[in-house]
Length: 405
Image 1 (cartoon, rainbow, N blue to C red):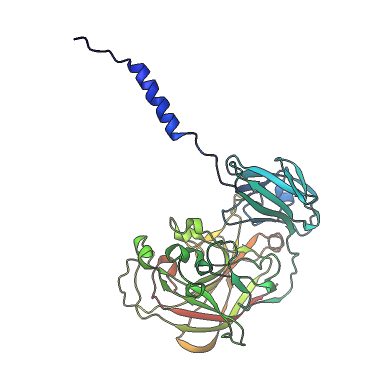
Image 2 (image 1 turned 60 degrees about the horizontal axis):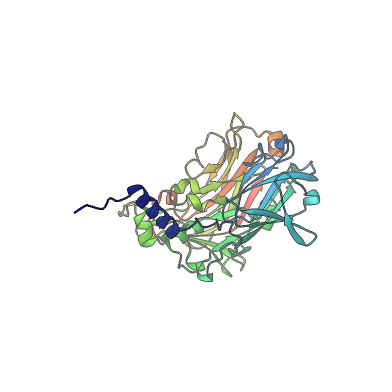
């Protein structure tokens, strides 16, 4: 009996065709994000204020949670028509709002940003089913005053975060401080976004950093910082506690799990010389101090507060931003003050500490945003290293940052 020969090449082609028909074409991209905005001018540093990552090259990276991109321009400079370029997710299309309608936008087009005008952009995904709106503007940096001033932090200006579209129970509190001026008002940050990764079901008042309405020194709101246990997820990633924190800067939630110290970005350009921090506090240490592994340690927890002024460019002109690893040790620090002598108390108690300088302030550098400043409060002094006592609670109110000029 003759065996029937199999045409192997034909068989392989048949199976390849069947496989291709099963998997179909790759779906079109559903993302609709701006990833970078670039100001396409020859010398961005002649127009943009110093002290920001975009100052030298005019290129601003946009995080996934941002929908407003604001460039600061020098206080004595104006802009008019500026060519901009948008780097967007794969296949997305760009539109700009003109005369009440969104029109196609091509990179390199000049856009009218005169008089701090806000321009609206819309990004549509490659599959055309999704869109996202952004605002881009160019705002003047504040004029240097060079006179003594007191900046007050009242903790009365707070709201639930609005960039998070999750259920109300998954939101957390954010703060602004109008008295700090237009360029600084939105720059307070907390570790609340990181805590949400471990306990997303927490209610807003169950987060480590919360406001307490009506319980402040003068009957307004105060700040409550409490070191919290992060539960099973926190134990799995060796981040068993989350200290309540409140600081002048930003929290990069995208880095929170892979490099927690890098997630806390301290400071914003500041045109004053801080010399003293004062305020009111209450403090109660948690019952059980633990190390990063969760083991009990014979130690009493303590809160932390400090103020740092630092040069935001290194010797080679590279942008410098302090994080949790070097906020107290970076060689660019020129002034540092830190809280000490805190005692447990359930009544409002005054505190103050001086900012001590290791070098003279360069007034020209100060006027051009060459220094950055941060103030930070925390419910556990070693909370950044996941060491502390759950339940440690630090109440803060009526803070004043005294500036020599």
